[in-house]
Amino acid sequence: MGSSQQNDSSSNHEEEADILQAMHLASISSLPFTLKVVVDLGLLEIIAKAADTPPGTVSIADIVSKLPTNNPNAHSIVDRMLKLLATHSILTCNQITGQDGLTQRSYGLSSVGKYFLQNKDGVSFVPMLRILLEKYVVECWKFLKDVTLEGGFSCKKAFGKHLFELLADDDDMSECFNRLMSIDTTFTMNQVLKNYKGFEGVSQVVDVGGGVGTNLKLIVSKHPQIRGINFDLPQVIKDAIPCPGVEHIAGDMFMEIPKAEVIFFKWVLHDWGDDQCLKLLKVCYDALPKNGKNVSVEAIIPEVPETDIISKTILERDIVLFQFFQVLKRGPNKSSRH
Image (cartoon, rainbow, N blue to C red; front, top):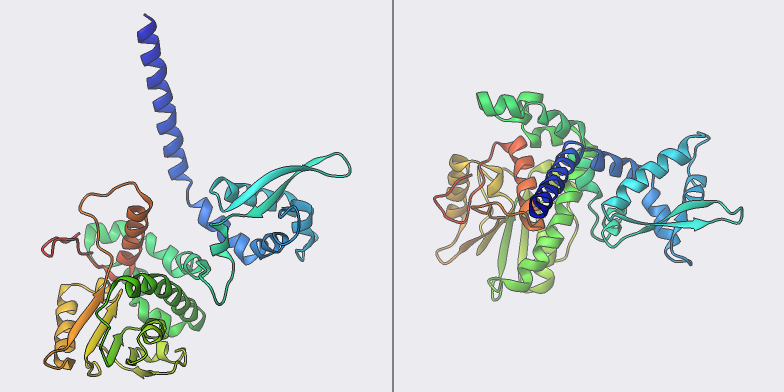
């Protein structure tokens, strides 16, 4: 009898946990939208400044006092938002007692939260947050069901244009997208250059779809014998970073690629289907000398999805890319498509 009660109790706890997890997933969109508002209000910058003075946290009253508002409800709204971020370890939260004897919450910036500061020079995921919550991206989700049943791709159905055409018409979004690509490149290329030795002894590299030039800036910095050519669309090249040893050239990669000993792709092939990739690789082949090589950096989709943070991050990016490019990502086996 006791054993039966224990089994029933365990089953009830498991069911409760499953229900809570389902509720959490159904409302998870509240997190990125709340985080964006907190970023846009500059609240993380306010909290970060408090880290330099004891006790390293700042009260809600002090945070709200730095906002340009007379709204009597601002204190409550800000506290609601920051509590949510604390539950996701973006902020730390403690209760403090004021001189009036009343308690209130005090917030600090966590090691994760620092990556959502609007850092112009370091790694910041604010551009990613803003891009993913832009009207273009949000609107695309409404068409995923139609794309599943009818074909096509969400961006085209929503706006009648490819993502890169939208970027060409929106300077603010284009700048944010280029900033995002630059940050992503810095993180990825540091790992590539740490482990890949194929740039040693190379004299010239063309980075196709190289954005504002961050890839080549890092490559040339580690291998100064290399002369780099950063190749991308005109609306991207106009924002390119001046860099010694790197020349920026605008053009269409499906038409012609500048000749070089190494032609480098990072996060390029995943934007296109098989036919476009074959066309691009043929143009690449024509631009390579006899002993030249193509170096491609891509994320590989796992055959069986796991629940670890790496798998979640890769598959979240995969579904976002699908919205814009209708690309079926490649798995670890060359014949495997997802």
